[in-house]
Amino acid sequence: MRRTLLATVAAGLLASGAQAQGTPKAPPPAPAQPPGAASSALDSDDAKTIYAFGYNMGQGLEIFGLSAAEFEIFQRALIEGNAGTPPAVEVDQYAPRLQALARTRQAKVGEIVLEKAAQEKGAVKLPSGVVYKELKAGTGPSPKATDTVSVHYRGTLTNGEEFDSSIKRNQPAEFPLNGVIKCWTEGVQKMKVGTKAKLTCPTKTAYADRPPTGSKIPPNAVLEFEVELLGIPGDTSRK
Image 1 (cartoon, helix red, strand yellow):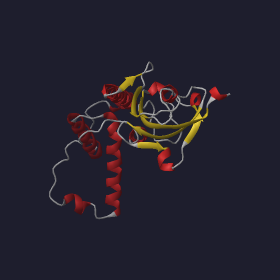
Image 2 (tube, helix red, strand yellow):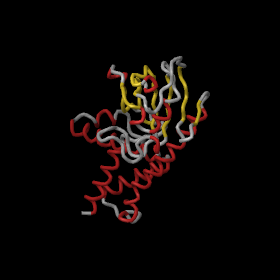
Image 3 (cartoon, helix red, strand yellow):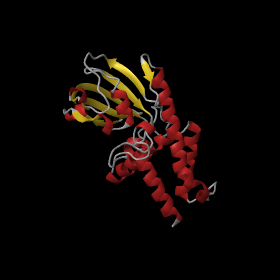
Image 4 (tube, helix red, strand yellow):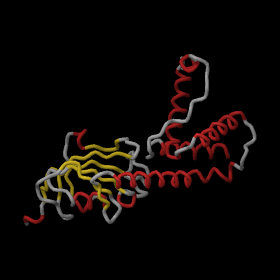
C-alpha cells in the first residue's frame, strides 16, 4: 500500500512537473557506459518504452532544479529502491514534503526570472510587480481597462516552452481588457496601437494556483508574454 501510494504521488507530481517552469541549465553528467551500449539497449519496443518513461521522469525533475549532488542522491535512491535495499531515510516522513519542496524551488526560479527581466534594458517594473518592456513602439491611442482590445500574442513558461499563441492560430484575440489576468490589464494599458511589448507576469498577477484547466501552465507559474496591440475595437471613449 505504501509503495503504491508513493508511486501515485510521484507520478502525479512528475507529470505536472514536466510542464513546469524552470531556468535552462546543463543536465547532470550521464553515468559512464560502454561505447554503443545505449544504442544496443534500445533495440526493442519495451526498451524504448522504458527509456521514454525515464526521459519523462527526468523532464519532470526540472521543477526541482537539482544540483549535481542532489541528482546523485536521486540516482542512488532509484537504484536502492529498485533493488529493495532498506531506505537510508524514513520515506514515509519525507515523501509528503515533495510538493512543498517543488513549490519552494519553483518560487525561487520565478524570482530569478523576474529579477532578470527587470534588469533588461528599457524594462519597467510596474506597481504590481509586472515587468513591462517595449519591443516596438506604436503611434496609436492607448486602451483603458474598460475597452475591448485586439491583440496578437505568444505566451511562454520561463523555460521557453510555449503554452499559447494567437500567432500560430493566425487569429487575433479580442477581449475586454478588464476581463483577463491582471498582468494584461495593467500592462496592455501602457501600450499604444501598434506597440509590441514583453510582459513578465508574477504569479499573483497571472493565474496563481488556478491555471486554466487542461493548459500547460502549472500552478503558481511566472509567465512571459509577447503582445502586439493591433487595435481597440471596443474603445469606450467613443461612446
